[in-house]
Image (cartoon, rainbow, N blue to C red; front, top):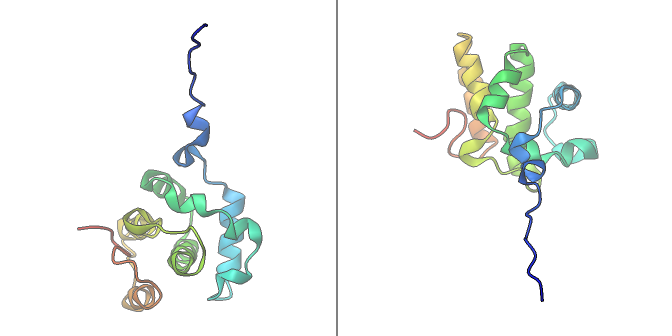
Length: 134
């Protein structure tokens, strides 16, 4: 009897945090949120099934947000806030993309308005939104 060596599968290919944020997908999300969408269950399946976006590290979101204007960042914040509540497997918790996106706005000296903060709190039960854990 011979004993073989066990070779694990390539973890890097399975690690969602190594996936790149696709600008085309972000553009689809922003476009879908333009008319002030409230029901995400009507969005295209490729958007609904991209729950891996919710698990990406904050550094990737900060890098991506630098390239976006404030209105697009707000559209993404609205999307990820609603996604946690409406779409399956979109739980961000303390790692929600909303947190680095809101941080980007603060760094630009254009933080979320009182109305935007109230909107987030009215549409989410995630206690970490929008500023993350203390």
